[in-house]
Image (cartoon, rainbow, N blue to C red; front, side):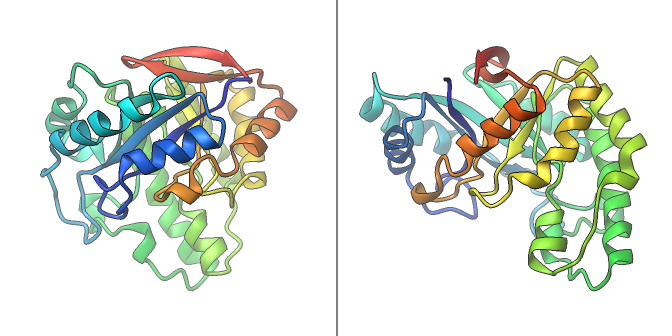
Length: 267
């Protein structure tokens, strides 16, 4: 069984203080075959303002520190989580042009710049109707993102539900968006891209079932697993349970990425 964590953050992300060597040691101890570092490059910051400050040098430094320590035990891939790429497509293309880049997660963490750019984390979801108003705009942003080529896998499609349902106690569901999600997933598939099952540090497995079943029905086959770990203790959390869910739905492989090319590996 191949097992890899393809959504992790170290101190190169604004919301983590973890050195990559510590993350890598945790990954090796968890029995992973690969760890992909996907630190944030969000082109809208948490206040919804443009942010084109991302540079590769800190990521390169962390990789140079971590790789020698786990050589022969763990493969560490160079990735990035690219947020709001459609807002600044030229800068997005520049970011993903790094010659050593293995993997790009395409993310939507914010409303569009035209809608104020608010990070979904900072919205107080007071009612189901407010949830669906936000989700309407969320999936419109996602439709803009998937038309681009500066991503390999669409990140955490169910992301806003973390705050709507798990944090604020609402009961928003995605089935009303099935026609739009079919369009999104069909575009992803037609471009040779994939989606991830993001376990949110082991807290979110079963809520993925409906969307993954829809993805399979659309003909999707490229999937990665990610814990969204921002600290060593969360690396690999929920990955085995996520892999079990994928097999239950009918998937037999997950993807690894080398120089932005997917290689399908048996679960």
